[in-house]
Length: 319
Ligand code: ADP
Ligand code: MG
Image 1 (cartoon, rainbow, N blue to C red):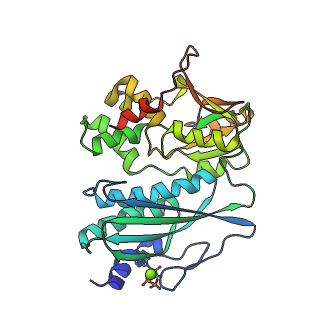
Image 2: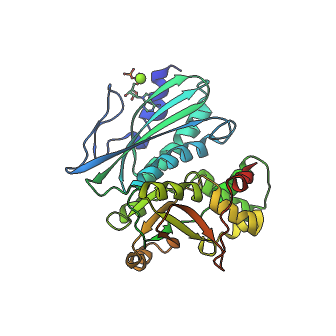
Image 3: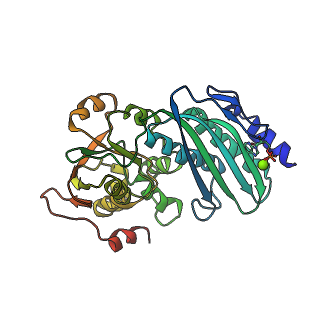
C-alpha cells in the first residue's frame, strides 16, 4: 500500500474528513482552507504524542486514536473555542492495515463526537508518533486565558480529578483492580471527554481557565503566575471518586487528585455570583477553592492546616 492509498483509504475516506461548516477545502490540495465566522479569532494548538513516552507502544490503536484527539480538543475547550478542524501528522514504522483501520476509527469517533473535521496532515515512516493540530474559533476578545484571575474569585473544576492518573497505574500494569473499579478509570484515561460545551459556556463568565493536563497543582500554578495571584485549594472539596479511592486508598487518591496528570477537565476561576447559575446547567462543576492576594498554590485540609505536598512528595506518586 503506497502513501496516497493509505491516506485515501484510512483518512480521506473517514466520515470526519467530509465537508463541514467552516471548512472551505479539506484533504487533497497543498493547503486546507478554513473560513472562520466574521469577527472570530482562530484558536490553534499542537500536541505531539510519542510511543513509549506519551502512550505505551503496544496499546489498543482504537483507544489511542480516540485519546490523541481528545487531548488536543481539550485545549480548545480550555480557551472557550468552538471546534472547527484538525490536522494529523502521523509517523508509522509500517503500514499495518489492522492497526490503521482501528486507529482511524477511534480518531473518527472522537472527531465526530467533538465536531472536528480532519482537513489534512502528513504521513511519514519512522518510529510511531503523531502530531495533531486543532483549530477552533472564538469571538474576538472572549477567549479564556490563564491571566485574568482576580482576588475573591472561586477556583472551580469541571469534573473528576486523578482518575486518569489512577488508570495509568493499571495501563502500565503496576496495579490491578476488579472491573467495577478499573473500567470507569480506564474510560477516563482512554477517552477523556473534551469539555467543549462547558468551555464555551464559560466565555464572559470565567476570569481564567486551562485544562488540567499536568496535574491540578502544577496547572493551578500556571494560572497563579499568569494572573499574579495565589490559589488556595480546599482538599475536602475536591471531587469524590469512589473508583480512585478504592484503587489507591484515601491518602494516595488525594495525592493523585492534586498531582497526577491527564485528567483534561477544565480548571477555572469564577466570580462567586456566577456559580449557582453555572451549576444549574453543569452540575458536575465544583468550587474547590479561591483566589487570594499573593503567589503560588496552597492546599488546606478541613481544619485549615496547610497540607501542600512538597515537590518531592507528589513526584513520588508515579514512581
Ligand atoms: P504535500 O506533499 O503537498 O504536502 P502530501 O502528499 O503530504 O501533500 O499529502 C497529500 C494530501 O493528503 C494533503 O492534502 C495532506 O494534507 C493530506 N494528508 C497527508 N497525510 C494525511 C493524514 N495522515 N491524515 C489526513 N490527511 C493527510
Ligand atoms: Mg506533505
